[in-house]
Image 1: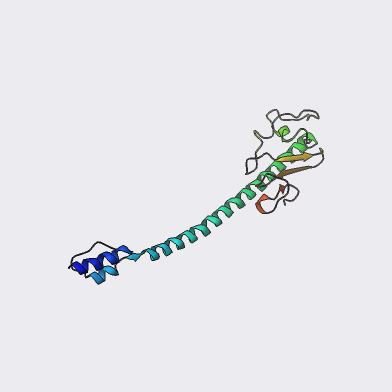
Image 2: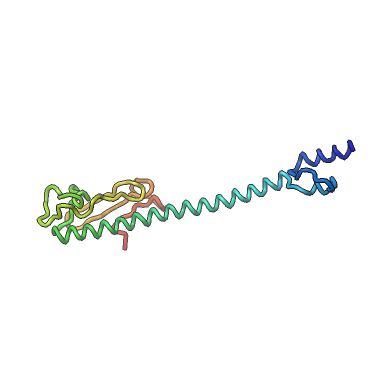
Length: 165
């Protein structure tokens, strides 16, 4: 009896097994559980799968931010075209996109809507203001991308109304 207990404890140290069940031999108990190495391999495989899934999800999230910013630039372009239709000019760089919310200072619009063309100027998907450049005849709306700096590649690349369809 003493010898069989030593064997049980020796095999028990290296594996996770079910508690002894009456009617099962010590050999059956030795094969009943998973070893630590097997469990570590399973955990490593799960971690790898989660890493791939997380990378894909983050990439999709960044792609969605770029798409949302492009849509906002297109919508602002349509609103600016409406402003030009009503007023005869685009707001200057100095007047900025604020001219869409309230009557612009300087060169004024005769038919300006007192409630403005929009209620609030949107920000890009990274919660930064758009860069607006205009001479009154044409305009460029830009988002500086994920990094908030001029230039860049990938998700950090600037998004400009000149480059959109």
